[in-house]
Image (cartoon, rainbow, N blue to C red; front, side):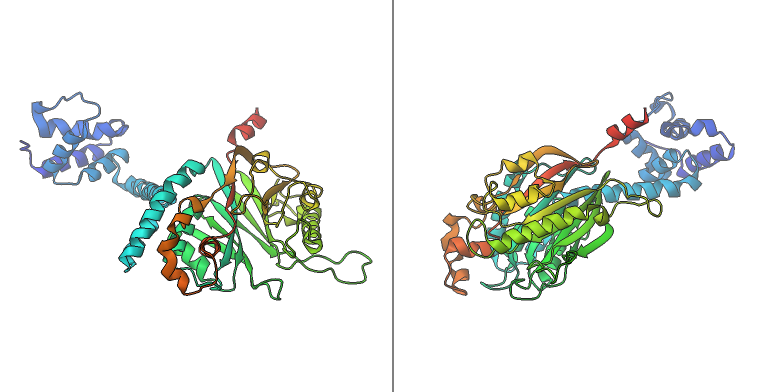
Length: 451
């Protein structure tokens, strides 16, 4: 048993500090060694450099203090005045650990308890239990500093209510998918902001979104463009703009603008600066080459490429000086049917490069036979390197499966007239999310330049 009164032990610590014996406090174990012999007597090894936690607990019990109090004093070199800095670091690291847990997509599940319909709640949970391991297998795990998971996703009619507004179930599935990426360009957001606000609520407070105003006019379909990103990994540089096609020199008339205004925004992740330009190109007729569709792709790609230097959000250190190297990336729904036709050539001829790993993907529509969605960078990358990992994710293999049709009969009856195969695309989407993993830690390459 410990018999020495706590106040004597505390006095010993204070006396030692006041004596100015700084050398005795150079390592955490030294505080404990100075106190230990007076409390334990011969029951402990006086020469023990790092007492085990059970002995630290016994010592603190004798002193009537919390173990963390003594450890804090030890790691603060025995100086109570130095504890503020140490405690601030501990608080920051605890928040980082909590943040890492949130990045794994766990925090929003508690809200499932608020769903009063037990059958629906059980169905959502079972859907998530199928979805989560499938996502883990298909998509690399997010990292804190080494890689960026960049994605683009046309989420159908988000959320127009055309065939019934989305309920809890699809929002949980969509949020689960989005949580596996760091930065996502989203097309086909409709006029209300509720969908983005709901998704951010499910993902957590560290997520943010940027969004355009509504594109007016029949061809614009009352759509918005948006970026959704995790602020712990990605920071917004302040650059945000909607692209307006300029009038060509000596042209008699203003150019026909794109049906939906492309959205440009600047971000930083790790060592890399990125300028993203997302677009939802006019569809028109259901043919490989619709004239207006081709004209939009050509005008968009050429205008972005021609003004690449002006679109950078990277730091510019003095007036007139060029900004730091940037990465100009176009991504979104280009409504390209075939990679070998002129719609795709309009992108590559403007100087954009589709990473090879994305060229191997069969298709990004649900049937996997169309190449609607694309991610391409302009000429070359700076401090950003494809890792070889890329793909699309087919969520219908896990949720809203064809075998589940009978389960949704009642819900579908509210807005009849669509087959289940088509109806489910208004719950999730008729596009699959496309993603690519990019390395953002350029430390080794930078160090090589200093040798």
